[in-house]
Length: 283
Image (cartoon, rainbow, N blue to C red; front, side, top):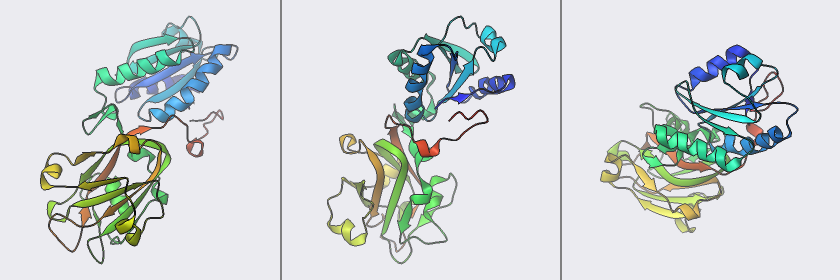
């Protein structure tokens, strides 16, 4: 959901933030019926495009901002990148708004829309529900949370080379690919992925039908570790379970440095994550 601008200085900060990401500003009026339609359009788009910033400006509360941005009618949406207004959409036209977002992201080479070289998809780490994710047979000194941070920290197995990772998302997602980084001799080799199966243990992983089986090679890791998934099988995913059977070097310990899921959010808002700002409006 779009954040309401509550002070003029905040708008200046928003434009400064557009140096790093696409910003969409909805200029609205409380007395404008179509403006309410824009609210309903932007709510799911904020979930679908988590790398884009969505904001709202009341033109009657901030007439100087509206004048500066040359707003003559509501609703008007302006699209900012690197401090510049690069596009404008008038009216509650969902297709025009989506097209403007997609055009801005693709033309700017936005990293959020080209995660690890996968065009049109994003890194979904921000929607991983870490408090409800776990790894069976992890070394507690090298836990699962390490794979979601950049650096040299690792996730390691404990009593043997096998692991089962349960990863939960805070909203339904569509998965296009996964990305694995790992020390080569300890890197996962044979992997089974189960979509929406939170009950998978080691015995189940050996016998249950996986959504996809992957055999990683040294060359795959050296080329970036990105592996495409069978997209049609990962269209409405709330969680994934990953069974790691062994590693490239037949070592006693399997290790993962980084794990990322690449895809898009399903077109719904996650109400549990909405935070209220000072005006009581959601984000």
